[in-house]
Image (cartoon, rainbow over all chains, first blue to last red; front, side, top):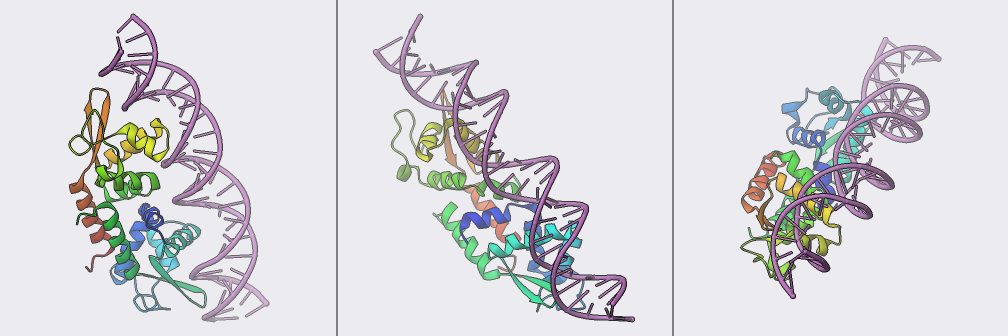
Length: 104
Length: 104
DNA sequence: TTGCTATATAGCTTATCAACTATATGTTGG
DNA sequence: CCAACATATAGTTGATAAGCTATATAGCAA
């Protein structure tokens, strides 16, 4: 995904917060009965509840984050799990630095 | 300015391009009769013309960039000059890295 | 089966953004 | 002084975004 698309993805308070939470799921979410926070990821409902937004809105935010490549999605029966994509974030930060601070 | 405000500022193709150009004004703008590109900055009209947008639209983009602290503004008679604020950009990049890639 | 939970999809509303035109103000040069 | 230029401001429009409700689908559990 292009630099500008990733910037648009992050230029939203809720999405930025979600990404921050997903960096360290155990620090921000209660244990899940149906899937390990680290191994499988954080499920959609937990994110929606913690943010205090409706489930469809959360679905949409996660779609944007996945599209930008910042988060990966795993399905297991009727659950959807999300994990941060650290490599993509690292690439993005490098790109951004090259673009807006090339002297470094 | 807050991290999220800066992200919103950069999440626009034209503004991102302007910031890139202002990193190295001599590489992107012709010499100015009325003010040195490096010493004083790039004047508004030059930015509007190069982007192919109207002057009021350029004024608005520059206002956003200045508000975010990424660019500084200097007035001289009827000209307005803009220069990149490298320190602010550097701080922003650090902030962002801390937020979305804290393990580094 | 029935009901509960998890997620997806559709459709709507409101807010924000990026662009424009028109116009005003102020500066400079002839 | 007047014309040309630089920028600012006001107001409008069209597109996109973020939220919601209502509803559909699918899995699980009693």
